[in-house]
Amino acid sequence: MNAWWHEVWVTLQAEFADITDASQLTRITVRLLMAALLGGILGFEREQKGKAAGVRTHMLVALGAALFVLVPQMSGSQADAMSRVVQGVIAGIGFLGAGTILKNQEGDEGHVRGLTTAAGLWMTAAIGVSAGLGREATAVLSTLLALMILGVMPKIVKLLDKNGDEDKP
Image 1: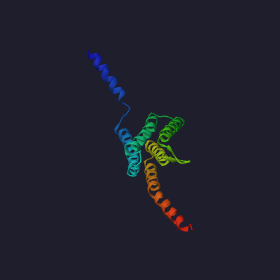
Image 2: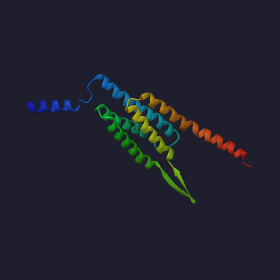
Image 3: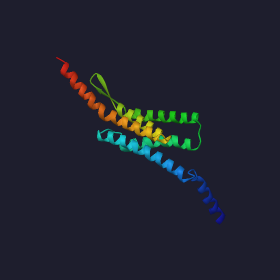
């Protein structure tokens, strides 16, 4: 029975041997935490505005996207394989985004809701991919730009609409 337990122990060690040293553990941890944190920042902004996809959703999307690219990269996948992985992430997020878009019938005109949420999830996945590939500065810059778009653009649009209404007779 002792040989059996030894074989189990050796097998378990082999199964958990994908992280080989401290630098690799640090790299994986930084990339995944960065993706989750940046996704959470975008999610917090959306949650503050009462949108359905909030902090947890955005964190999971960014973390998942980072993991999808991190694992093949760490296992030595070539550029063409990584291209297919990224394409798969984009397609998968497309399905998730489609689930957030609703069309309400209001009178004769249909009113579409959720496009910004879908676009935000798409952007969050892109930020996760960026962090997962080790492009943390690009991920941070993209997050800041997305926050500006989500926070500043509605104010600019409202200001322009107000100015446009003043010009009407």
